Length: 144
Image 1 (tube, one colour):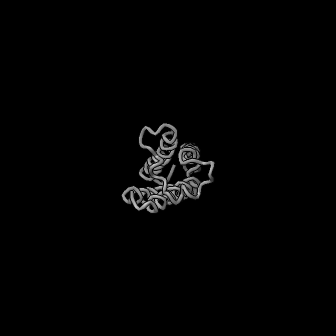
Image 2 (cartoon, rainbow, N blue to C red; image 1 turned 90 degrees about the vertical axis):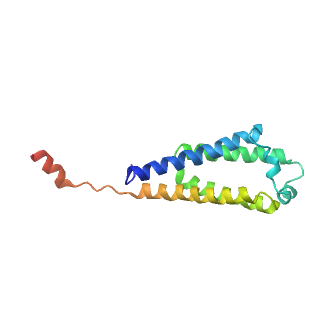
Image 3 (cartoon, one colour; image 1 turned 120 degrees about the vertical axis):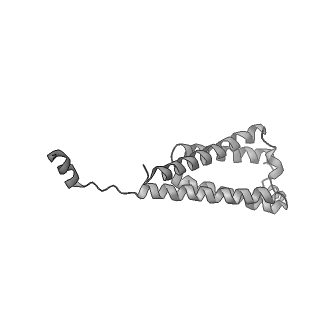
């Protein structure tokens, strides 16, 4: 448990959000139900891809990465993967800005990246809490 119930609630909200978000986005890279993800891929990035890797194939690779990251966060690796999610979201924002469009989504992803940073930092705070047992308090209870 964290220092307070409120901080613990914030930790769980961030953990679920940054676990399910990448997981669902990663799954959708294979179905394109939410959106056709290829339209967000910058032409500059597409030019850097090997000739045998299409935009669709690249998005499938991205989807696998996002699924793994989402599962890692949901399963509790929030300290390390919080930072990975943050960097990933900043990279997505950079890609969107380089398209010359989708600035609104880029700003959203930068802000989400700040939230992922908060998840990693709250995890560190949670892991740094030290419980000091008071020997005398235990003696007092047994004496009473």
